[in-house]
Structures are given as structure tokens and as C-alpha cells.
Image (cartoon, rainbow, N blue to C red; front, side, top):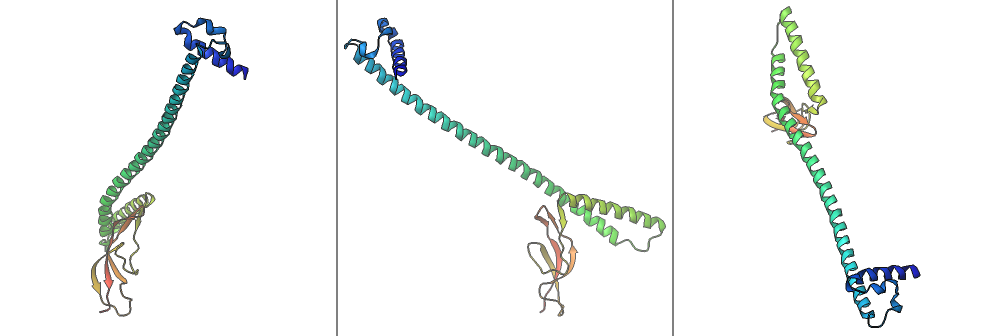
Length: 199
């Protein structure tokens, strides 16, 4: 208690230095003449008011710091997500272009018939290249849509024709004209299929 009074007394004396009350340096509040006590009270009120204003400013600045940190964290997460999406879109475009290369490989491999020894060696080389390309693409998230014999699903399949087979169920896929592909869970090209219709 006496320490708080001493601190207050020292603070007030420093405040009154510029008003020529050096003699108050060693006096306590209750030892100060009555004429000077109102000045103490005014000074105390000013100190308390400034203290309250400073506390409010500190609270406001702390709130601002917390909000700025949260905004920065949201910005960091958003830019990271946008960067990942941008890379994925670029990869999707690349995969879409490579699908045409796969189609050409498949057409070339299907058309190879009655080959001599040199032709068989060439065919084996092309087949190995095709299989290696398929392996690399599937390791990077490309999957072929398994369509033959499945029920038609417009999300994964594109019907380009119909056939009539009584022994097959309605909307079953009879044949695949062009393979479809999924890249990292997203269909980048639906499979072109022929669907069974009973009528």
C-alpha cells in the first residue's frame, strides 16, 4: 500500500515539475496544502483518462493484429489452393492433348496384321512405347473408363449409337467406339459408346 502511494506521489511530482512545484517532490498527497490538492485531482483525472484511452488503443491494435494475421492466413491458403488448381488445370490440358496420341497408338496397334519379322519387331517397339506411356500417365492420375458391358451413365459415357439385342438389358453398353478417361477424379473425356435399346 505504501509503495503504491510512493509511486503515485513520484508520478504526480514529475507531472508538476513544469508548474514549478518542485517542493512537492518530498511531500505526500495528504501533506500537500489544501490549495494544491485540486491540481492533484485534475492531474489524476487526466492520467486516468489518458490511461483509459491508451488501454482502448492497445485493445484496438491487438484486435487489428489478430485480424491481420487471420487475413494473411486466409490469403496464404487461398493462393496455395489457386496455385494447386492452376497446376491441375494445366495438367488436365496436357492430358487431354496426350489422349489423341494414345488414340493414334491404339489405332496403329489394332491395324497391324500379317507382319513379317521386321514388322513384328517394329510392332513390339511401338507396343512397348504405348504401354510405357500408359504407365506414366496412370502414375500421374489418368484412368481409363471401364465402359464395355456396363450400364450407360451420361456422366462417364457419350452415346453415339444404339443396337437392339433382346438378350441384353436395357441401356447396357454394347461396344466402345473411343475410350474415355478420368484425370484425378474428373472426367476429361467421356467414353463414346453404343448402347442397347430393346425397342
